[in-house]
Length: 312
Ligand code: HEC
Ligand code: HEC
Image 1 (tube, rainbow, N blue to C red):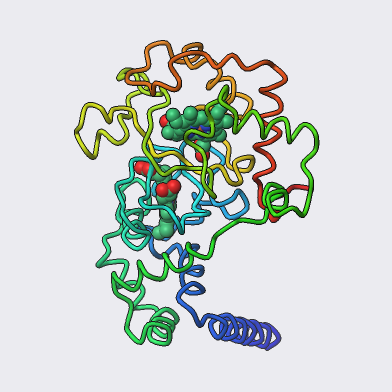
Image 2 (image 1 turned 60 degrees about the vertical axis):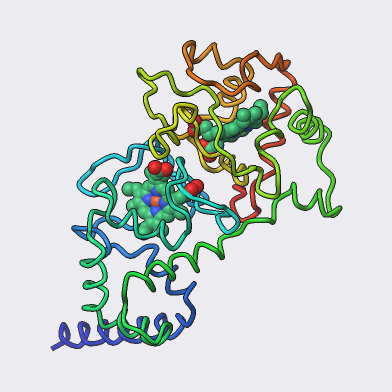
């Protein structure tokens, strides 16, 4: 009797709790947020978007390649999905033109969630909770289009513009002397960083080759895979640098574990990769940064972290 009463009580608590959380979900973005950590959108219900895009690490992953369905590894490093709102295309090779379109791709990807969109939509329709939520918010049962729209609406809310750097540019706070020296290195001619990492999210949204393609051990041709244009071999989209201190490891293949290594690489790419093919003209010669300039640059990059990710 006692056991039964406990079970009943727990069921009641769960019911009330899910009633409240469901009642809280009234917008496309809120629904997208729930879906972002929904595992039923993967073949064996073991993986969600948040398994790889980990919210506590600025929606990136902490390993070079992420674990998808059945323990399979992704072919590229998982990028952050913060500050996506103003991006003109998505993925390292830009193969998706909108967040709506992008969101349906990991669901079907055999290395990631491995479920057809028809099946994913079916599963949502079979869930009374989701069916109700879609009807409430979209006035439609779940379908491919509103599923993509919910994810996109959520991702568009993930803008992070509250960093120390933002306080500096809004005249609220001063940078330390070292941060300011790093900023000058970053925007200066010697480092070249600003040629590619500028605008509000520190990317010009172009595709560039920084020398990480040699057709041998470094064999991901990036943009070339999409365009089949020889000149695009080894080009990847320039990632934004907001929250970069939180999203290690770095590059499309996660080959650098720290920002210090990234800066050492840029300072003299040939020291790491001797036979890079089609490397950008800006990076053909060593930059010649001093030890102090390299340290200052890393300290500056850390000012781009949104306050919600600052570790105490
Ligand atoms: C198994 C790990 C994994 C899962 C699960 C996953 N992703 Fe990703 N995501 C990646 C990887 C790896 C890339 C980069 C792939 C590439 O560029 O070829 C990526 C890229 C992206 C991008 C593009 C970011 C940019 O900088 O262009 C977005 C947006 C995104 N994912 C959203 C999602 C959403 C939404 C889901 C769930 C429906 C999801 N991801 C599920 C690993 C994952
Ligand atoms: C010619 C354009 C260009 C220049 C110059 C450049 N970058 Fe990059 N940056 C890129 C591209 C493209 C990538 C992605 C490359 C890849 O994954 O193969 C990248 C990646 C990065 C990453 C890793 C981002 C991530 O999410 O993994 C960091 C950090 C970075 N750059 C910082 C810098 C700094 C600091 C400088 C100056 C010393 C600099 N970049 C100069 C184009 C450039």
